[in-house]
Amino acid sequence: MKRAARSERESRIAGIIDRIRDIPPGSVQTYGDIDRTAPRLVGRVLATTHQGLPWHRVIRADGSIPKGKRQRELLLEEGVPMRGDRVDLDRARAL
DNA sequence: GTGATGACGGAAA
DNA sequence: CTTTCCGCCATCA
Image 1: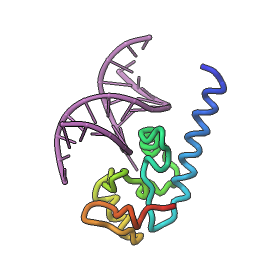
Image 2 (image 1 turned 90 degrees about the horizontal axis):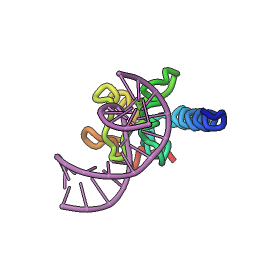
Image 3 (image 1 turned 45 degrees about the vertical axis):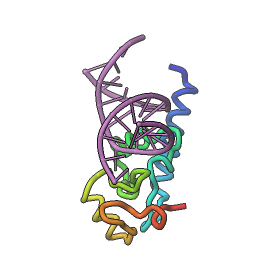
Image 4 (image 1 turned 60 degrees about the vertical axis):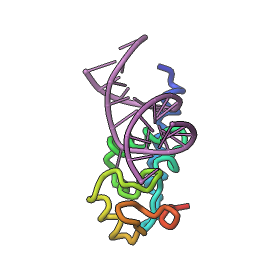
């Protein structure tokens, strides 16, 4: 494949990682917020990238939690506003 | 090369 | 409120 294509792919990945890393404690971002055009890519990055990323601060667009109660507790510890089993996005969503 | 899949999203019913 | 369907990007069989 072409070099330019590869480079662009990787920079997109890098950007995704940066955004995740910059999510402040106590707030969250959705997959869509992180990359509008490829939310699935964000999920893939989290599933395959094992760096010290705050993976628990990434949730779905409707506020539901992808990784289950384990993740839910971590968010609770940071004081993320919840509404039952979902995150209250209006209050918790990072800018 | 094709087709299925995933830590998804949004629209439609 | 729910389920279904289709689009999205990158990987994998």
